[in-house]
Length: 137
Image (cartoon, rainbow, N blue to C red; front, side, top):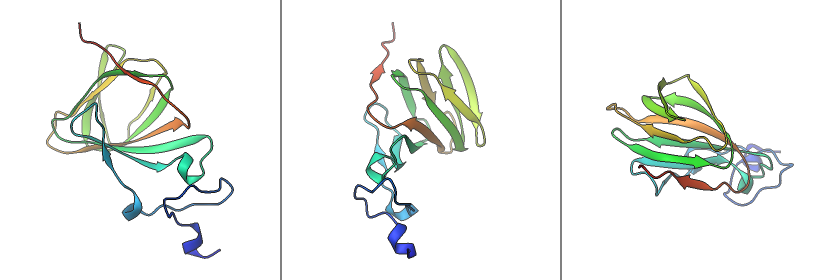
């Protein structure tokens, strides 16, 4: 197989075929629920991954992600920056190299108080995930 045979053409891939996605082929989209948060699916179902998806998020300076829950657990690895993550009522400052586990159903949120963009990887099971915003009362 040549190098080009294993690269991404953004079409649905065969799960038995290896895949290399080049940085220039990965598209980021703003996340509606939070101004300043962008997401890219690095590898997911559309790329032949049957069990797990890897997503990359960027959190702009001053951005806040509101309190919310997810039906599925997710694991995160902080790539860059320093920001606050709230999980079930406790806030934690995280930075590049830190890893997190957010249990299914846990109320969590993010806040970037720094002047630099934060970035993290998020691994989740493939399939649907219901996200619910948590009302502030």
